[in-house]
Length: 277
Image 1 (tube, rainbow, N blue to C red):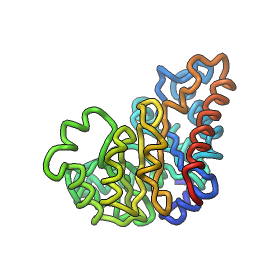
Image 2: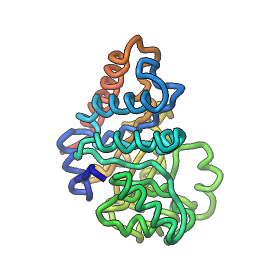
Image 3: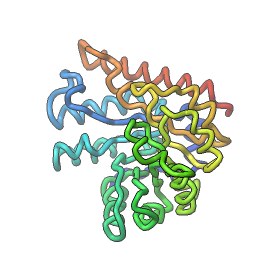
């Protein structure tokens, strides 16, 4: 790993948010069917596109979240490209490997090592549904962030996450908050369910929440901010497609990049109005 991030706890992350007046996380989901043709084909096009997005948004983004599936689908060359992209992300930006790993014992330890030590990510998304021993190898890394799935933004969340009394997502939050601290454990909470974020804040008042679903999925940034902000911001709001493919039919790469930059700056400006620094 050649990249060394420095946003290793809440205080450092909050400093970055204060400096940029933004809590924007840019999701890197390079769908080959959506990448503008001007960037080229295959892995080369993917890498050029992602590097351009990082370059045009890094002044307002405090985090980048590459989704590993889009890179793994290309095999070893895709993962090598991801490694280079991560190495190019500034140290004042958190890198979240969106891998949604979840397994037990030594397997989980190897997943953690692969994402943190080899890939160089500062954080990783983890599925908690196999219990504490599937998460501990991640949370034991005090110099890294574990981002635990809690209340997701997809429609299929209704299949399990709301079942029981209290609902499963509440039980996940209560139990898993004992596996780490607010300095190295954050939770995924979908922006499409803002009415539940107030309840989540009661359960994990100090923790950071990674919030997908703003933009293309229809979540409201103002609603998320109203119910989710805490004394150290406590939010990373992710936008992927809304920024990456902001230009629907660009005539050039320059136009595509300019439109993505404009969309990121628009979101960051809206965020700055919600912050009381």
